[in-house]
Image (cartoon, rainbow, N blue to C red):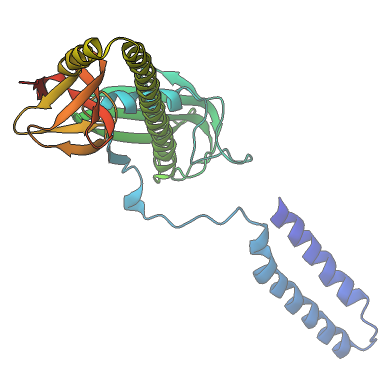
Length: 318
């Protein structure tokens, strides 16, 4: 429509130029007409392309319909969660309708689609479909209204890696002609899935960090309470006779102190194996037990270090 309007404008310009020429003789009017024609042709060749559809990147014919496949460094269950979220978001990225912007909306999740051949290579399959799409962008020679469908195939490679394949196709309603994708939809949808996986991983790491911080805080509070209890017990013992106090201290020492078994062990910052090491303990080193749990002792070393030692690494004083 813009090109037609442009032609009309050029015609009016040519006529106006000739009729308004101030010269009366034939040669002068002919020169004026030639100037008008040249000006019109210049505007047609230079200005007219500005009124066409937006410039599209060049895609080789053999690139259409290749689909998209990638290996994701995440377990299958996490990839499935991300794919399900994208399949149900109602949006098809990487394309747009003829007269609209950004992306294609109002898509719906489907359990199958006749627009794709039967998949026989295993894995979990999802579909996202939008009907009534008008000439979607990035599909070869799409000029009519039809259905746009995206297929997602998720296959487990091993415990920590997953294969994701995405294909997209547009099929006209009237002629039933299939128009392959140039890969824009597949790449855009894959990026949405990867972004979702990254968000899941980030939240998972934050949750693990918060849990570790709570465990370490609990261990510090328990250590403090037990130290206060020991100090109160020692103060009460100091009020008894010297002989009773000595005997009591000897008993306490025998019950509270332990020796590190050979070949040695590690003093941990918290009562679990993945906690950071505070220091290495040599075989025969003595420690004082401050906290007792089913599997770990909260201890203090002879140089005043506090931490946790697995019960199997300690033995009673001789």
